[in-house]
Amino acid sequence: MYARILLIVFTSSAIAQNLNTFGIGLSSHWLYSKETELFNYTLSEGSSFGVLTHFWTTGDPAIDESVFSYYIDGESVPSIQFVTYMLVGAGFNDQTTPWGTKWIGKGAKYGGWYNNFRVPFQRSIRITGKLPAIKNNRKMIWIILRGTENLPTNFYGFQLPSNARLVLHKIENQTFHPISWVPLVDIPSGQGLLFAHTLAVMSGNLNFLEGCYHAYTKYQDEFPGLIVSTGTEDYFDSAFYFNAGQYHNEISGYTHYKELSNNVYEWSAYRIHDLDPIFFTNGFRFHWRNGDVIDENGYKCILNQGGSIVGAPTQSIVTSYTWTYIW
Ligand SMILES: *[C@@H]1O[C@H](CO)[C@@H](O)[C@H](O)[C@H]1NC(C)=O
Ligand SMILES: *[C@@H]1O[C@H](CO)[C@@H](O)[C@H](O)[C@H]1NC(C)=O
Image (cartoon, rainbow, N blue to C red):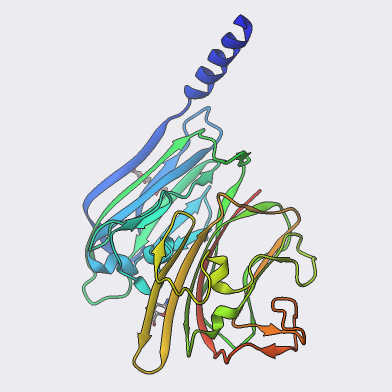
């Protein structure tokens, strides 16, 4: 008994010693149409890894369209580069507010975008911001960034390896034909987990929502792989084309809907997988379909080609952010 208590005290104090929290809060700062450094941080001597834990920003509406880049461990091409509205899972710069979950949200009429995804690094992290091309070449930003050295990341019984990296896989404004496959993630080798996904679609009607999600948890796995959902809205924890309206729940949200005058529909949703991670063991493919088909018995999600198209999905313009941890 006595020995066990001693051991616990010793272990926790040894870990706690190196929990250096770092960060910045920049107020009334300028952002330019030229990429500008907002923050850089190199691990203290003796620390083995660090993790960014918080991002928040507000300011001029141009901030909403600005691009933020995270350069991990001296990367020349950032493994994470985003606009704020997609970072919080709200397509088409949806300004609905206030809402929030522990991971993402928007807490003000103008800006107030935040994200608490864990972004691990081994040596350094460098963060930049860049305005969209605008006439006036600077706009005001307020930004808070924070992290901690040697802080482990746990998801309900699973601890991320300390060498894990968060990678953002993007599709931006790409056009897909009806019932074509949309390759959201393509990682030829390695292990990891699917952490979060946001999909934003512009289409001629809502029949794209018939599309099923498939995960191939080993790169070479064949269709249908792991059937992750039986339709698009089902993946986001709703049903029947989201007939209960919009919501911002902890692990899923239906964040945007707009019917434009010329028979064009905008829609977006997010899904966080911290509670039900999808692990991959030897490469990974994650696919969504722009609409779907049924076989002769009326079953969906089980035909790769052929079959009868459900409804009349049209061409869609797709933007997607999919976040994986890889190690
Ligand atoms: C990192 O930021 C510091 C100020 O905090 C600055 O002096 C230094 O030049 C920056 N380093 C790089 C590589 O940009
Ligand atoms: C995608 O298209 C929208 C609407 O035209 C535009 O506002 C946005 O900047 C585009 N995104 C990218 C990454 O090109």
